[in-house]
Length: 194
Length: 194
Image (tube, rainbow over all chains, first blue to last red; front, side, top):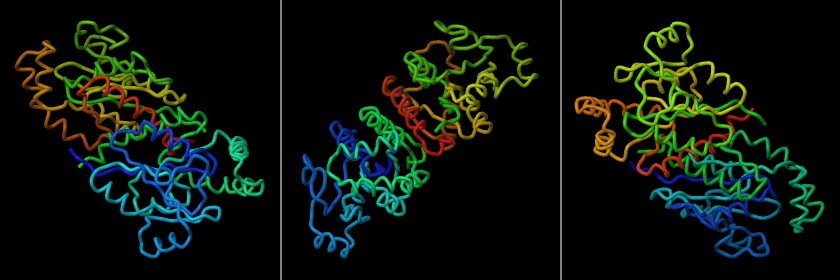
């Protein structure tokens, strides 16, 4: 029995640790799982590497990618563009390789419209207070920015019911193990077999 | 967020290694997972223990359990009665404990009618030839019995599409790990949260 590739989407509120979680997962990646690097106009954070964490680009280049239909989805998040290169994702799924995406909530919901049989995983903070602490500890956002992000939280969490799985990111290792389990389990699904 | 208990059903053709797999899983059981011991009129196999592997009973007692509605399902498999005690399963699910059942295909399909949101896992042999070898190696069935079991195989496998997951029991440790992953993943499902 063979099957098409499965799209796994890690998503959740800003500051919840999606990037760290994805980094932990890809340190020792699951077999036959490939990470789809997003394109963004935001500035690289400390330690982020071009082509591994993001393709960093400028607004004009980004707009030309939109215009030529090369993005599976794109969104403006906190004044920066983020997008998912289309060809890379679709080609891998077609040839049976599973693809991992790490993406904000707006983007995930757009992807779900295009690839409804993807696996959508919502990463939650242990609490909204803890999310505030993490955004503060990250030290990269102004107080105003942090307040704006926290204000979005209730609206973001309201989308939880559109996701397949939820994983609380309390302990990074445990959360990564749960995502690994979800990947293993989805690969055993009868309905995905051809 | 809280949830009801989840029923996990390990099922598959006779000789595929369901019992060994369940034994391996329960050696180091998942947290908050309880095994529902079935009742049977068949003779204990070497190493099987009353109350751990089965409740062994006689046909008259079994028939009285049927008559008093104390079984969630029951079936005659190769001239022996097998049944699932009802109260134990329903009480545990109600209080939020996950329950594991190991059961033949007829039984699993009946359980699915009663508890449709259970998680149904079909254990497959690597091949039908390998299944024949295992039935022979087990040395407990006559050649006629083995041929009868293998003849049922095509009919049994036709029920695969009624299951949620399939796990090939090629390597017992890997198969047990896949079932653990399925348990972990299902516990993260958004639709199971209340």
